[in-house]
Amino acid sequence: MAYLARLASNPEERYRDKSYLKDLPVEEIQALARDCYREEIAPRLSPQALACLKEHKAQGHHIVLLTGSLSFLITPLKEMVEADWLIATEPDRDDQRFTGKIAGLHPRGKNKEVLLLELSQRQGLDLSKSYAYGDHFEDRALFAQVGYPVAVNPTWRLKRLARKQRWPIRYF
Image (cartoon, rainbow, N blue to C red; front, side):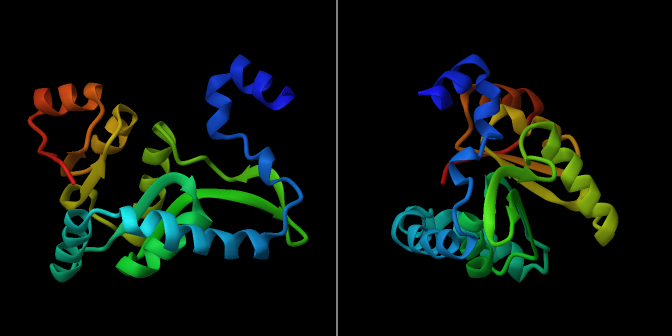
């Protein structure tokens, strides 16, 4: 009950609060995450989205999966689509157990932009020639950094912004 009360008093914290992982064994949770991916996530992946990623790969583009989701849930997707990099929420660990905190920046909102800029500088990526796909209004800072933003299954606010900016809108 205290957990819910804390989140209700600070709703933005719900994205950063990983206290439900505290003291859970990393290896066990990663194994469960792979099962979850296989049984729950993979069957819901859009064939059109996967085809889009495959086309980018065929054109020699680097693929960066940038998400606020937990890294251990998205790692199988990174492997499946042969993405070059994964930037996701990294749960902090201590002696093979999760601490309940996040390691590093939480990739959400403006932090997505910061993390992408850091990666592009380290890897020498030309963002003016890069594509970004996003579904939420919070992705607008990320979109401002790339040459080819694409709104995918957008929220109403992102859809309105995409129309105003004349960004493509796709539904997968």
